Image (cartoon, rainbow, N blue to C red; front, side, top):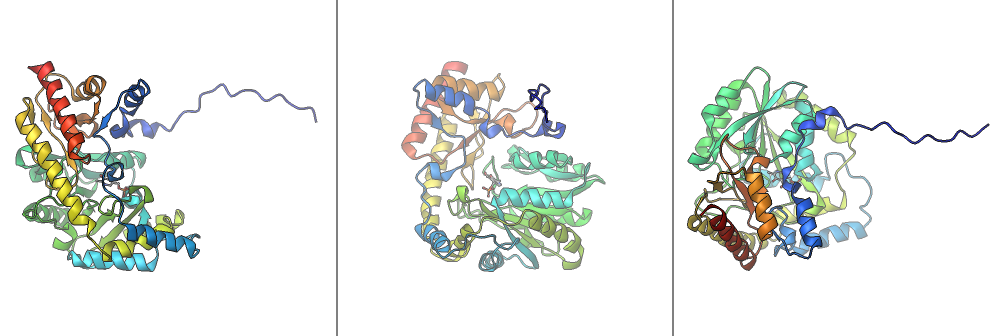
Length: 407
Ligand code: PLP
């Protein structure tokens, strides 16, 4: 056969149009930061919620558990819903938090995959989920991918960033299927009160909605006065998926170990859960050896947690002190996780603010508009994971920047 010369492909291969609204602002400025690093500058990174970049080592017994599983040959596929030792331990941990009526527990590649699977199993094209504004952008990314709609409800800064219940109520329509609740919250660090949670459960009950409760930071509570409560524990009669994982509480985000806990009335949620299980089977399984760390993490020594919380509350206090003493800045002090979302009283948009701050002072934050925010307001998200000397250096540079620029 005569050989035909291969023609170079000239037509552009376009990405699917539905990706148009998929954004992940947290890494937007990474390119500028890389340029500055190439020029020899040292960047103070206050942008990414990865404790392993800082002084938060993984508990050694968890590493040993995974290592042992690998040595013992647990390197093949795992069951689609996860290994029994792990799902049992997750179920017991949920029960200790008061979650009853548990219908299914499943292990996923990070909480991110649980979110993707559960939203995918529930929402048809054109249906919507109530999502917080500001929000952790995973939710709108997944909803856009599904060609479902983002239906944002306000978090009220004037009320400690608690969800605005009246706004939630107003936004429910005939195509609303679910409420997303992130508690403790990223990016605000707020922890929701029992009253707020009960009111949200009541809203879900009244409108027949599923609650997606993202509680990935539930053991990182910075004030004893505001204990974390799981909404699923307050509303055993409401269909609820509680998302959790090892990434943050147990300091292994790179292992990609997360989970979903489905609770609520058995019969009504069975078809939806059937869909969740179908999608879990279709992607085979989560990483296998890492799952052997779940029971040791949840039920073994917890001594890292008070150490982590003590460091984080000192760093939160430093952040709040910076906000108090810096003009044009105000902050609702975070009560959980490791994020602060100060309001900036400035004439420019916040993306310009963070870009200029990065270029001139080499401090990297994420602009508030990357998370969405109330119209006309400006914010920046700070990750206060770095140690105190690093944070102090960053805050002093940020205060100088603000004073120089805005007087
Ligand atoms: N949910 C929230 C609110 C987060 O902030 C994050 C990560 O930053 C995730 C989920 C993702 O968690 P995972 O690493 O388990 O996928």
